[in-house]
Image 1 (cartoon, one colour):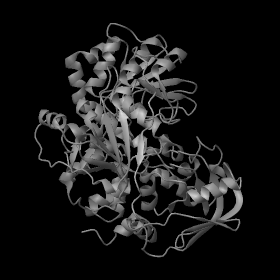
Image 2 (cartoon, helix red, strand yellow; image 1 turned 30 degrees about the horizontal axis):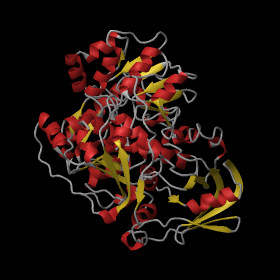
Image 3 (tube, helix red, strand yellow; image 1 turned 120 degrees about the vertical axis):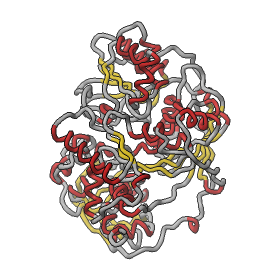
Length: 586
């Protein structure tokens, strides 16, 4: 699946010299991101995308149909047992139907169109056992927000396999929300088993042949996390991070004032979400000075909400309707947060600056909490009973033997020597690497991309970068959106290589596909901290990264870096995916 980024994918497709999409009936185009933009330029862009999709024989959903991930599910483009990818980070959503849904980059999408092939790194697998039953008023959103806060690093770069007796009591909408936000949890996929709930959901929408996925053998799991659903309580995450979650009953006492509230996104824009918000607001009005924005996950969902009366109840309460699409969740269109404002959203991300000004604050919560907060004028929600604090329960399994992982071989790459730039900050997201304002500007210049690098994390740093610099960062570098411009912006700024304690899998894909070495080295980060270099600095030191010996040298001291696997070496040797694919196009 591609969305508004189809035009950028087509540019890569054309650059490869490809003419026809090899399997167009397996490709979906859904226009969903900038649907409020009626400028002549965007209308022309959308028309060109539609012509291309229809000429190629792809499955096409025009603007206003809904968010691509929701359409992939409700149109049964995704079925259990399938591998389904999207050029968008929330492809994890498809795991709710028992599919392996996972994100790819724009360059990957162009390569798939042209060759039908893709490269992959096999992740470790974490089993998440759900026990018990959710208490009244507790939702799938509360479950995934709890997991993000309790286990912030335990599934990073891994695939999540949900299991356990508690799943039977989860409605499909809750499963979709949980699978969707395994992206924010740091996982490359989050897959639910196929059961009676799954089969009934599919049967309501038609019939599609599928095979049920198989359980992964125990030796391939690196850990097991157990969560008692009965102990989960409504909570609010933030501001501006998913690593901090506060029980609603505690935060409500602080009466944190809000200016905007959002019932939007592919995380929580389905019928049950709108109905739960309507139940809070029916017959009432949002607080004076608060703007409540509502957008259904698809046009079909909005029609269902209109029939149920939920949509009108929200409008009567003062909600401002938006067309079905991404909108404020991605920082586009009406209702964005202004400097100094605080918002609460039922969307999936609250990264600083994502939904508006970088000088605003944003919290995340369930639709009922968002509605109650809009009603009260401060963060609030339905009253619930206090429960014992959730305690992390994780069992770690022996790591796979090195012989089971393919971490050697491939062409020689030599060394990279450059000025050391350190930004030893954890969880630098792709919104910080490439501002949202540039993401859907196909004409964004290299200068504009370079100027936007790390502005929310290290203001002024971009102007100090020069060609050949090596950037060293903290853990979970490149989390968040799958935007390929995050790698492109670093290249535009002159960065010759990125070394981090750990890297987001999607960012690493984007970097390697664009010929940017992206390397993990907890040892190097620890060594630089010991040398008191940083946390943010453009140093006068030189760093040498030996990609063949897997070492990094600073001030005569040597740190180990993770060896690059053969596919990474092949991509870097070819200058990126474009060079790698040439000669493979039919």
